[in-house]
Amino acid sequence: MKPIGYWLNRTDQALTASMDALLAEFGLTRLGWQVLGVVKDDPQATDTAVLTALAANADAPAPASAVTSVLDGGWVTRPQPDRLALTDGGRARLAAVARRVDAFRELAAAGITREEYVTAVSVLERMTGNLTEPRGGSPARP
Image (cartoon, rainbow, N blue to C red):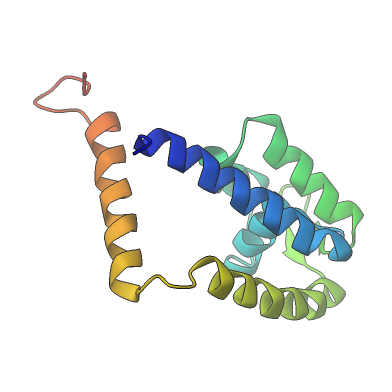
């Protein structure tokens, strides 16, 4: 059996490649989709909030580039210099994309029960905590 790190990397690569292919016809990438999700959930989203929310998803320049891409694509606008908001057209297109992403998520989870999914996410969350949260006043160490 291959170690968990192998499967984490392969899963992330597969998710990114598959989502990028799915979203290409909309002029989006997986990261662009994630930017839109943050802006949709927070109508007063700032660049800092978006970049902070996506910091774990990609290296530093990638989220900023995704913000520029959705601005250039007309998905979002700047109602104020440091704010992002969905455009009316972006909101309408987002609904169509969301239906495709929902189908993608069903495909990705085919053959996996809800309980298995919850267990997998819970295990990964705990592993991350074990490696990032301080233990007894000092950082976690192997």
